[in-house]
Image (cartoon, rainbow, N blue to C red; front, side, top):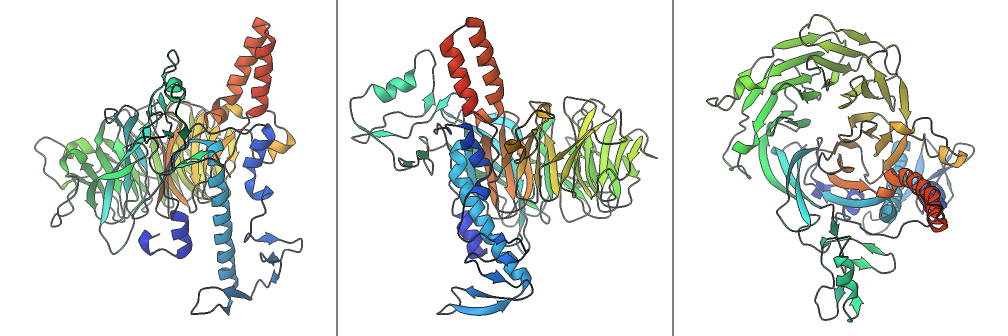
Length: 575
């Protein structure tokens, strides 16, 4: 993860070759509920060459069907020297080869199924891995008629090279955009991207009014009925570009913007101090002879860390946790005055000590400006009042069976917060009863790194994990009835699994301006911007509404259409 993407091994370069950006719109949906079930279990239902499988005796079976000794095996390695040769390798190398083949096979299956599972997918290969990812709230909508320019906060993670705090622009389609990449004979566009009007039907008239023969553009596949690659009907749509670089001391472990001012960004790196930047004061490309110059340096920790959070209610209040087992609180406004110079050092106004191990994450309460939470590798959760730092208001010991990596308060429900752990689970907690979690979310197969609530729906949250997945949970579905077949795919509250990454997912973020639009970054230099298909999160509600309407009007056609839609729409999980 600390090497340049250009020098990665052959398998990684092969995976990164799908770096479109790819945008899918208007694809044919699966025709039956069984089609959706097929998509949920692609690896179970697809015989893929090169994927290892396990026999009943527990011995690993090679793709050719030959048994492999777990302690020593002879593997044919192609491409060594002029001819293929055999060499003896250990168990760990055999496992790595088989895992690499499995990841490649899963990715190919996921890529083939993206038209059915997503409304938008964009994949961008970064020069260096990013450990952090966050959308900024400001949107520029005057770039073109069908494109809105959104902003992403990223960072670099490398050694031996200069690290940067990055600001990227991401061009996304507007809500009413219609994308049609077909071109008429003679070279003129038959239908360009533009706003769709339900009353006038201008988009349909543009396509159907011409008597000329319409042929697909180069990026439209007739056989697969897929539209992707470069172009998308607009040269701006789908572009992801780095438009600002700020020199950073060491890799960027985490970067977060101040809620009250998106240009003020705090970062954590391998050093003990936190850095605060005013992006409006930095050029797009730093001069070669420039030095590292944050506006404010927050000192108080004795070692590095990851946990960091801005107060949504008190402007300038910054909270952090570190490997030194402490939580520090700063008032950044002290160093951001009009006459302040770059590099101002400030001390914490409060320090909280209770944990016996690394403080992994911290967060602010959404309604109470004095309530904060911290979680640690000692498996405890502490709820603090910032006016009293001597001891926490509540402390939950052994809250998880593994290290607790993240904590987040619900932005709407003042009683609820969630934690993610190395025990592969996400736990939901109620502040009124902290004796035990109110519910446990099971769906990941490796430790959970980040948990974050949706900004537009209090019952929806996401989580990313070392299992290369981003999970979207809908708590309103907890306890819903499931068929035996659906239960094999996970609990009813597991709404969606994003399976587009081929390495550990370091961070993800919700877009505050586009509902269900996500961004996620992984350790193999990949940034993905994606939105699940509308049928997945709206299908059930729409079916119920159509059925009620059909009964009220006593219209046979409406009831029949509703029944057919109910059969066609199911919960999809992109595994």
